[in-house]
Length: 192
Image: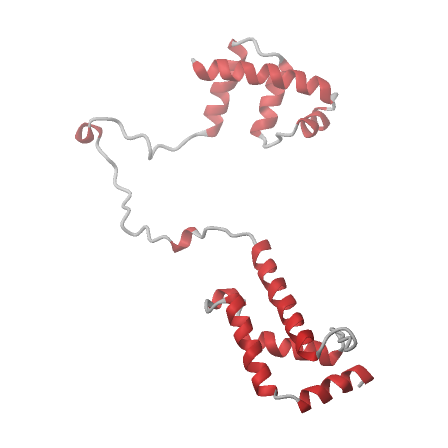
């Protein structure tokens, strides 16, 4: 053990360790609350003992000339808690659809004369037919070959102008100009 670790273990032996642990545990709970999700599977005591472990192993260094021991352990604890909170914030919060109980929803075919209109919500969309219909409308609206190629890139999930330019081996400026024309033409087609 290094000299610093000996000093830390000596201070731990000479202080009221039970009181220190209880106060550190209370501090952890005051910052993270009682919700178990905030602890990522840990307990408040795990945070406390992690501080002692880091101090004794040399991961955290105590400069006794600048701060007393309690200030050091509480500062380390505060830092660990802040890191845990930031880690939780960085995680993507994704709504889980599996949590929603949809057992009451039945997939019953609705007869149109019973409800007064044709229910199209259960009809499947055939993207090949939809794509071909829109291509026909583009050709009828006198779209250029480049505009049609850009639309087909969109259908293949290539959206960025630079990626389209690289794919078609054309200049980005040419793609931008064709994109503007295609977007105007698309708005006109969709209005009809």
